[in-house]
Image 1 (spheres, rainbow, N blue to C red):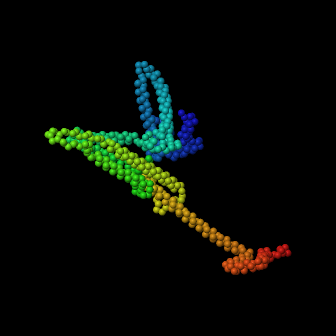
Image 2: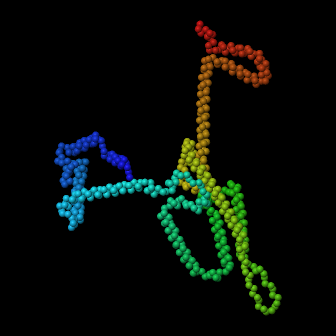
Length: 532
């Protein structure tokens, strides 16, 4: 139940548009009065239209226009509707009087006196009942808006949306107890229809096969009692051959852990196209070929031994007497069973099939792992491409902005397609990195040039300042001396002579230099006579 405060807030929100301040209400009344005055003009109204009698109609004058005419039409319609309502109400009240009256009813005067009171009580009861029904309807609608009323309230996907995912479990463990997640979302009606179609198709096939079997039985002249051992052996060999071929075909279709059979076949064909790239795979393939060749040769020998007729263990001795005795009929020896011949070969065949199945399973697992890693790398590259501005600043020429595998389900596709997709996603990054490197080098070169230009300007300014200070001639002399020393250093004999004379001329040169520096000072001309 809603609290009184909530009910009050709802009422205020609903009636907010109808409750106006006193000034605004007075302003609207004045506007309406002015509008009515403009419609009436100078004529006077015989009776106010707001308090018109229901029994009296309102005539619509010919000069009425616009809202005035529409209001008069609506008023006439209201009067006619009220009259019809009163008529129906009178009929209902008269019918209730005739039904309620009986042998034990009161007098007509008493009934006429009590009719208004009874009607009022009935009206109050109906109003209360209506209020209760409205309350029930309101709360039912409120309950329908609750989360528990939605069909997805107990949906496991929404319940476990924010929970930590379970650790990965091997497929062999989950395969026997788990149900495909897509089966829970399938439409039940669609599944029922498909099941009915499958049952009907199976019944039709069964009937057709029964008819065909009856036809073959009617046409066949061979009976099981008349079939020879050779025919049975030939049938057994044919059945065994078909069974072995079927086993080989099924072993080649072993699915992987997380991929479909089509993907395994694609991966198998993709790896068979380039077996030289993996020496381990090439070695395994050579081992499988040798074992399969050995299996075929063993099978041929086995079939040859089985097809040969059995030879008797001992031959009949030659007759020793020439008497005319009838020859003794020797019964043929019983045929020895060939089970001991077939058992080793069947054991070898089963071991080879298990090895082949293990190799195929290992290959599928490796393909699945590599494909998963490549898919995660592709997703990481897509995420980085969405967040990075490097690819947008330096796009690959001729590359399209739309991704090729957006409409592709995750996990579907061969290994070669996944590798190609990864190469395609890495190329824009390599190109963008090269372009960014070149752009950085160009910017650095431009900054260096700007620095050199600024440095040259600074050197010019410094040279001007030195010229103003009188240091240019001194530096020129120093530069000439340095150049002279460099030229002398290139000759060994001149360098030795200069080192010998350097000690003698050192003191004179220093004293002369000090005098030149003192004479070149900026304030030397003052000579202490600033105040004189």
